[in-house]
Length: 79
Image 1: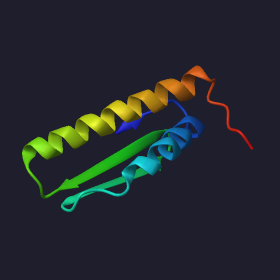
Image 2: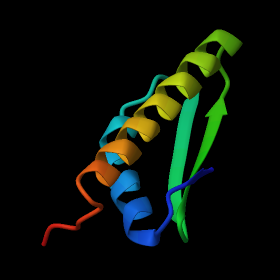
Image 3: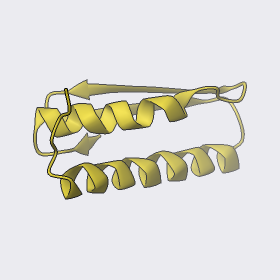
């Protein structure tokens, strides 16, 4: 769970990460959704622990980068 501070920022972070979720290798699934002011990630892995850790590292790194970017530009939604 990544708390973003408000619903608009959470939505922008979720949208920024969505293209990275596909295609995934066999045995790996990532569900991401917004829950109010938070983005929730669920990772399902039937691969090695090493693969799971690498995936979690990628997800967390990209989520933090997306959140920092959105906050840096003021969290503005474009129409």
